[in-house]
Amino acid sequence: VTPSDTPTAAAAAAAAAQAASSKTSRNKSKTKAKRTSRGRAGSDGPGTPAEVAAEPATTEKATKVTEVDDASVEMAADPPASAGTPTGSGAPRARVPRATRPPKGSRAAKPAPSAPSGERAPAAPAAATADEVELDRSQIWGMGDMAIWWLVSFVATAVFSIAVGGWLISNGTYEVFWPNDEGWAVGEVVGRLGTGQAPQVTVGLNGAPLWLQIVFQIPLWAVLVAGPLYVARRKGLSLRDDFGFSFRRVDAPMGLAIGVASQLVLVPAIYWLLFKVTAEQDVSASARALTTRADDIWGLLALGLIVGVGAPFAEELFYRGLSQHAIAKRFGPRLAVLLGAAFFALSHLQLVQFLGLFAFGLVLGLLTKRFARLGPAIFAHIGFNLTAAAVLVWNLPLA
Image 1 (cartoon, rainbow, N blue to C red):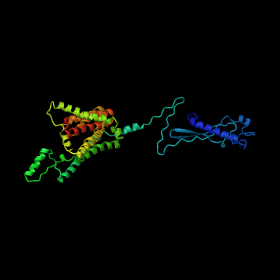
Image 2: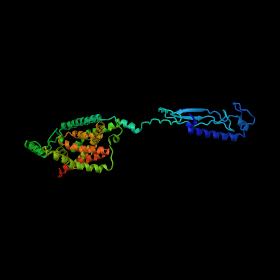
Image 3: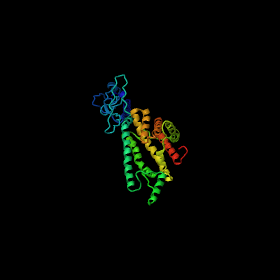
Image 4: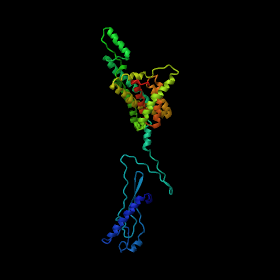
């Protein structure tokens, strides 16, 4: 390594040599310089014109090269001899501070190959950025995780419902299934009175209070949320980076408006066309079975938690977050919207509602693809569900 290769080290060595020369000149009048072992002759003392002319113009410089990582730091030893400056072992050494050593255990980068004289040295290959490394990590999860967690959600819900429902039935609180309409209740009471029994109305699990319905939904929502959370934590980056779980202020008004319009315009138009070629059916039967139990303030509150909080957040995080993104990695983002909507509609296990749920699933998928986040889709889902609940609870003309 030559001084021209390390300008900072050479400058520091020159500065140190100049300082040493000045200090020696100031002390020359007090003490006499001793003759060195290099065989300088003359009795005039150091610094006389005869000696300056006799001694060589320059003295060899001893260099010490220390390699730290890929940097070579030059340590200048004896500066060039000049008038009035003693040389040899008594001359001060100018040392360049050593570069900071890397942390213990870290790998030192290999030095870049040297370039021929007159050519610029080739640039060292750039290390992978943090974003590139994280992108590689985010490729671990896929459709296999989607399928596994979907199956886990249904198995967990079935096991929990059987366990809790069996306990309630064994205590005589509810029956496995019992019609919960008013006509059946009146007929049961009349029949019991006619046979000398106490008037009583049997309640099936399908007519249980809404707070019990929330209890039955807990394992389903828990798994739908736990799946993406586990996948993002163990196989990806985060819910935001992997599945777009983020919100902006515009998401609420925009999403709610789209959800309400989908419920009041899109779904009725689809079934109006369908019933032109098929027999008309009660599409709202399953939803009405849920809303009829909201007969007091607590029932309305429970209904709002089910359709306005639990279902939109859990389902969008799983179906538009994990599922749609996993399908997109395999088949592309456009086909992921279509397949994700079909998967969403089939998962509700409602054949009559399939077309309406599929159409709304397309809307939710397009919102997620367009804005690259789940905020608009979640609020659209909230608006869609709450509109249906309000229409059925208060028997609005739109029903």
